[in-house]
Amino acid sequence: MANKSIFSKCLLFLGFCMLVSTATLSYSSQTKSLKGLYEDIAIGEIDGVKLSINIAFPKTRSKQPRPVLLMIHGGGFLKGDKSQNNKRIQKMTQMGFVAASAMYRFAPKHKFPAALDDIKLAIRFLKAHADAYHINPQRIILSGASAGSYLAVMAGVTGNSDAFDDHGLYSEFDSTVHAVAGQSSPIADFRLVKYSNYPLIKRLLDPKIVDKQKGIAALSAITYLDPQDPPMFLTHGDADPIVPVEMSREFVQELAKRGHSYEYHELPGGTHSFSQSVPKKAKTVFESYRRFIEKWAN
Image (tube, rainbow, N blue to C red; front, top):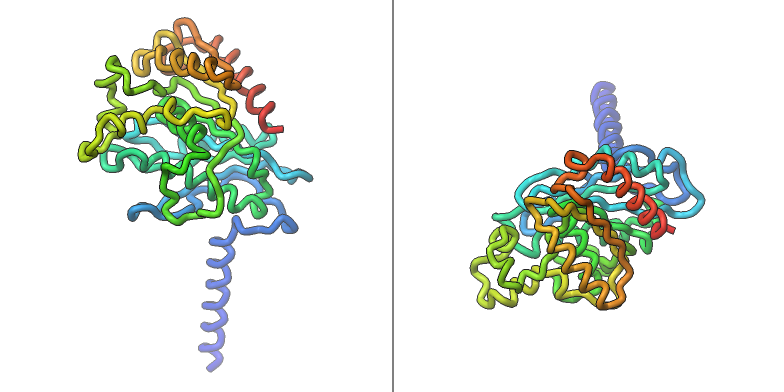
């Protein structure tokens, strides 16, 4: 009987340990502050895919809830991993942010709007856990490059759109954000003939769609622009061989027509990667980026 009692106590202790490990990010605002990097936090399941997010917290607890910087990795909508941003989000905590990197589903298996739905879910998840994570749900900033930038901009302009499914996950929260920052963004008006063969369309547009032109319009960020959209910080290299710089130029023109709040920095000689092609200019742009996110974090 004594052995059985000891065994039962061991099972109870192991169960308690498992409970603590799975509830690590459920602290209330009155308990010890979260610190460091937490990976693979489950945020929900869509179409059989279990989605997750990585979150980095500053070393010290602030009196006021902190702003959030949600980073979205690139990879041509075909590959990549949220852990690519781990070092970046940890660095951003030094600026006072709670920083996160979200997972999303890839093409060609998952067509539009799958990846966008996943990012919008990540936003709603953060809002739903605002008290537990000691964050300000009204100060969420999106940041990304290339495919990640497209998703950041699209999430920004569709935050108040009812054209997307919340899949029954955190439906009581919206996916609006406070600001968007994007580099080398494939944000063209894909209805234009000159972009008809651009790879993004083939990768994301469902071939089974009946109204192709309507589907292409849905892929285009300009379709959703309205006065309530968040301010934007956009950068592009004029020698980008992957995403034509004209895409950003044309989108910025649309923002200007609408009197929208934005910053646009075009780097002469810059390719798809600023750090590799124009490292000195890249540092200058990063300083502008830092000032932008600090401004809209407050």
